Image 1 (cartoon, rainbow, N blue to C red):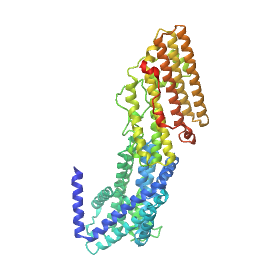
Image 2 (cartoon, rainbow, N blue to C red):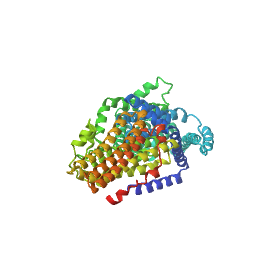
Image 3 (cartoon, rainbow, N blue to C red):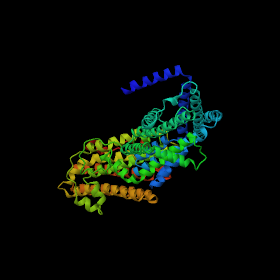
Image 4 (tube, rainbow, N blue to C red):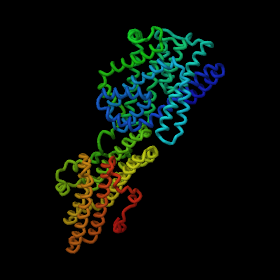
Length: 614
């Protein structure tokens, strides 16, 4: 409802302004061109910083000071705190960095963004930027039209810089022309009232433009043209610092609880810094004058003094809030609590009928291929953990018992889980199907943005997830007979079904061990050895079954059930092994040797006995 009122009102006001003042047309054109430059600049940087920036981010956030340094340097180089904050939110949403690292980067990004103000104050207000803008636009357009991704990305950067220069030129020209029409400085306000009003203007302008740099360029242009007083310009800079948090808020809308916490941290830091700047504005002005004495900044060079103020009050915000950093983190962790993320699935205590969905696949990660692929990897691991629990349930064990046991033979022969209130189908729908559906949907959304090598890895992950799901479906077929014959009076049939339990439990245990050790040199060797043992066990099962039939120790119904269920267990174990090998080696060259014929794997295995038994 509010949007329906605000948008038409804004359009009417702009139309009226354009009609009565050609100078306003020049200023607003400058703002639009500047914002277009920011879009192209961010688009170009994404080409070069996608994998590099994300890999560097993950390696340089293991301490608070490294996180601060990363935020400062990357924002200073990229000149886009929005790009940095959105990447950080996506990484945090994917669970690839911690909350403390993310908050540290946001702290640093606020200071790094002040570099842009210095560049505008030093050069943008003193050089004729249009003479540089035109060649940049021409060369940028030529390179942008090339098919080669590197040339196209570099062309976007040149176009971005060219449009930035052109936008600054038009904003500066527009405010200088306004001097002959109207003196905006006559609308200046003194004292605390003026500070608060212009701070609010700065907040609103930044929210509307979604660019702190655009608001600061407008402020510098108006200040240099004498259309804005120094004190009011300081208040606008403070307000723009609050308004810039809108980027984090918008980015967190598609994020999970961790991403939302980071957005709250961004708002908290910027609002607290702005409040301190407002309260201590007289002292900060004295500090600016004192500091300016160490640099070639004249007493009436208000544009450079504004840039200096912008840096100093952000430094003050970091210095004042760093001692409370751990307290802030503890408070943030109490917000947006997601119970599903606190522990792995435990069917011994789980009684929530809600359908589980993906934990790490959020819209915030979609625009950054490396981050998206890492998030997908974590989600596939989540799917496997739930698969382990369901298969344990299907053979009347629990995941906890499996992990704790030193002797699976003793566990299988001496312990059977009796409380089985749900069917495998119910648990599959509740804990697997929703996650698997999200993985497939997410994979389709990111596949077009990935280079060939990553497409292969994505395909491998999809095959691994398919294998896990197939394993559950095989276990579903044996679940009823397993429960029936484990309580049979026939000792031989009980023993044979315990052997089937032991086979599945052994495979799950070995996968867990390999996953913890990540010993790449032996994963393939263990997998092939285990498959060979499965084939040998299958042959032994058939020989034993023939002996039992000849000696009349089992009847024909027991024999047909055991033969059919033995085949399902063999296929389930094979699927688990194949899926685990891909998960453990998909980020190395080894995974390309695996048969990734997804269509062939999606065909259900033929089982003649199954058509009669089930």
